Image (cartoon, rainbow, N blue to C red; front, top):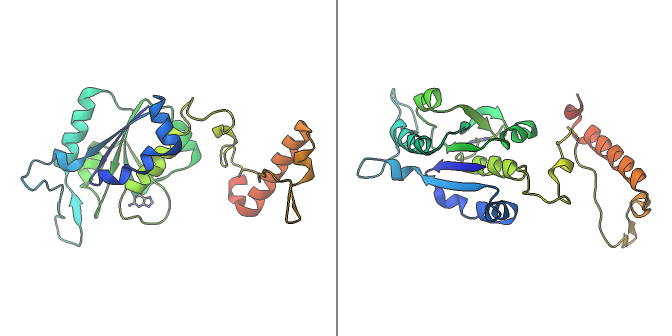
Length: 224
Ligand code: 6GU
């Protein structure tokens, strides 16, 4: 999978995209992440990528020209399955959407900023609009990283069997069951006996029961 990210703040991606699972996924060749600085596609001498909104009102708007130039250049090099705009008024990201998108070959993520982007970008260049939840972030960058991380861990080969994405919370509309590690007793706090019993089938049943219980208590909406 190849992910091209278009942003005015490329430095933000340096840390999160170069650690842990996402770093290893790139090193192993499962994913390639390319960050593009929108300013590099501006033609004016001050490298502006935003301007005042027609009709007035507070806040600057990302203009269509640099965005179109960047997306057109990328599209001339390969075919993209989706051109995604991260925006609070997009469709809310859920595990099902992540599963679906993780099967794509090439995607572009456009990070908005300021008061948003010229509507013509959304009407003519974007194929999908995604939000990561009902709250407002200062820009689409953190949302793009959240989306990218959620996709990358699902790409076959990225996770090993032990940390398989299939046992994650939400994967079957259930939250994950509690987990424990050594020591079996600490300050008198004991690990549930079943987990140290060695009965594999019983442990599986227990884990499923715990997952259902936790989901009923914390997220009953997932069971509806
Ligand atoms: Cl995608 N962008 C911004 N700016 N805020 C958000 C968001 C996206 N998703 C939730 N809040």
